[in-house]
Length: 289
Length: 304
Image 1 (cartoon, rainbow over the protein chains, first blue to last red):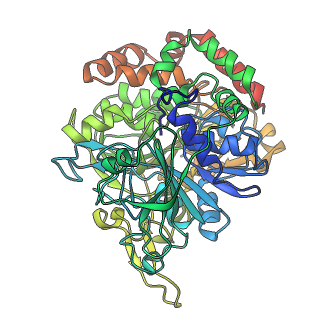
Image 2: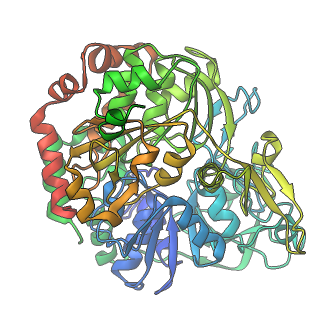
Image 3: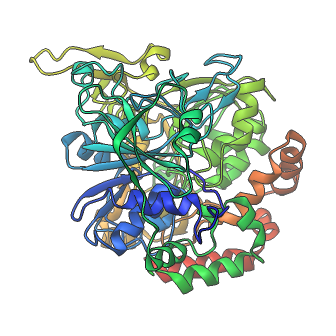
């Protein structure tokens, strides 16, 4: 997923930066993690720099445990293989996923429902699956990760029409219809989603109803504002938490991990670069920081 | 194939594509949005090949170009997107508006596609996978079959073997016999090479067979899978090729910007594909100094 480059009012960081830093806490040391490209990857890199130095990142292209010296723009970039513990094939990585070796997966998406079912295939609009309003990339490995990984963290900007009662297409199953044992009955091995990290707060899933509720709110955000962006009657935790401000060293590491600001800043940052030489220079200068 | 042709399968890219890729072929490409042979895609477009059915895992740049140029009828695959850059503009126009042609889409997950190529390579009719269960991928794709485990476990999804007519796979090193050695991740390439009817092996470096023998465990694709060998340095640009050159995210960003309109894409295509008689002209147009910078960057991290 792409980031937003506007700072939060009165703060020295953006909502995207807070998303990355908040979600990085979801990884534990020594875990093996599937992370999507974009902010999820930045979160994985940050976890490795701070509390989870032995976290191993896995890419479906066949890269297991890279050092993460530079940021990737696709899971098949050569950077995904930098200093990897193991370089292998795609079907082996998916085999290891099914076998149960991978603890956590971080996924982005375009549409999400209250049971954590995720759509990355198409927004139908006035059309349908065959002729949708917006064709999205498709599952990629998202469905596989969401099906079989130990637990799933979803990262999405909180915008209207993205958190909906019913997604147009279930690309990656969450807790399906929320009924007890729904995932097991379908044949799914993994535990499904445990958290949704958004640009305004963090949601978690109720252990009995498997419905998403608001668990943590970001500085300067009102609960009503979040409720308005969600397409169902959102439950709010009795002990609603406030996300802490990121530490200065966390922000510094985050910015060093994406030195050209191409992940967090997108096309605008790309146009600010003078050219390829500046990209090469900054990538080498900040490698591994 | 005559005995002498078996020993030396070297061709130009033009000859290899002209001989093995026909309008209406089903085709797959090696790599994983990294080490995909874009040079072969440009040549397919130059030769005006049409109605391809592409069976693949994640293959954005290849598909966006081929679909925009009107070469593809059908996509069976998992992912078409520009990662951190954005959605694929030509794919969107084809699916949403039928421009330049409608694209038939059959959605799979990456593990499902991987298992389809494994089945193809093993010459068995199908493979079981624990993905897509409970999702709408199954709802719209009737070729995914759910099967109760006859031995009493939970249900599994069955996926049919993929057996494309042609595979185009780029390796870091190959010899003229067609032994392909790959460094870095290997995607589904070993199975694509075995599942396909014909294989075009493109490479960064052409090496003597003695060098292949010295590192036999790096040979991902043995000679008997391969029908043509083509030497195509920088054949994956603007994508990366592990150990040789890094991804050109700025070039891809510009492409993405330019292809927001159909006219912009056609201008790009005229400039970089139709306006270049072959891959060397394309490299010159991109700029050799640019390619050298990406090689310098990559070799700071990965050196073969």
